[in-house]
Each structure stands twice: as C-alpha cells, then as structure tokens.
Length: 210
Image (cartoon, rainbow, N blue to C red; front, side, top):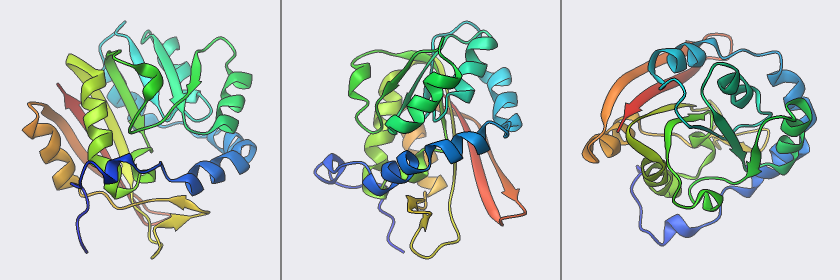
C-alpha cells in the first residue's frame, strides 16, 4: 500500500472528509448516549501524568464535550472544538458552562495564532484523509507552545474500505507520524499500543513534547 502521509500542499487544501462529519451529525444523539457511558481511563491517566497543571488547554475533536469538561474539572483550563455541529449541540446541552466552537483540522481557522500548553487530540486523526495528515500535524505543531504537551490517540479499522458507519478510518503510519514530530524538534515521551480484544482493534496512544 502506498504511504500517503507526505503529500503536496495542493492536496492538503482538499476539504475534510464530509461523509464523516455527516455521519456524526446524523448520529449525534446516539453517539452522545454511548460516549456518556464510556470513560477513557488510559487517556485520563496520561493527561494526569504529562499535561501541565493550570496550563491552557484545547480538546480537538471534543465531540460531546466529555473530555473538555473533565479537563476543566481537573485544573486544566480547556476549550473544545469539533467539526460536527450536532455533536457540539449535545456538548453545549450537557456542559453549558464550557466553551465550544465549530472547527476542524487541518485548518482550525478560528484559533488563528493562538497556542496552548496542553493539546488533546483523541480519536480524531484517523478521520482525516491521508493526503491531509501532514498538514494536520503541522497545525498541531503550530498550536503547541514550547515545552507544551500533545496527547494523540488513533486507531485503524478492519473494514476494507476504511469506513465504519460511513466514518473514515484512514490508516496512519505510526513510524511516519513519529518521524514528522521528531524531525521538527519534538520529543516522543510515550508511544504505546493497546488492543481492544472484543473488536480486534489496536489503539495507539502517543505523547509528544515540543
């Protein structure tokens, strides 16, 4: 299989995968009900281990706002952004005191030249077409302050068309992903994988320091 991790700037200007956004919009209430019962314990442990306490934070791909809310409750002042307007409606309903906005990688235009000490990007990058992944990583790098911490998680799929319920799960080369950040002066603090036995899926959790 051809590795599309590094592509031309022209390809990086293509729109985000619209089928994925549409699927999240259509299933927002069902997804919200499911996600409200799930606790990402490993991700929370990594946050407590590596994130900077009281450091300004952002939850990219915040979905129903569960993790944004948890971060604020734990002393990491956080805002959340997501590509799905319907998921954001659920987030606002569940956590009306939190700050959410509609935006998505790789552009994240609403953030302008802001930067953050802590960035969480969990279960997001696999929804981005491979041709845009480098641009997405470059934007994460721009948003991360020096000495800041980025936590990323992603998985692949067993489906031959790389889609589950219309959502894109493009395969990501972990080696190329790590190489990108290392070549840009970052330190990989953690690179682990965990198998979800029931669905035979492998999750990758990566912690990066700029």
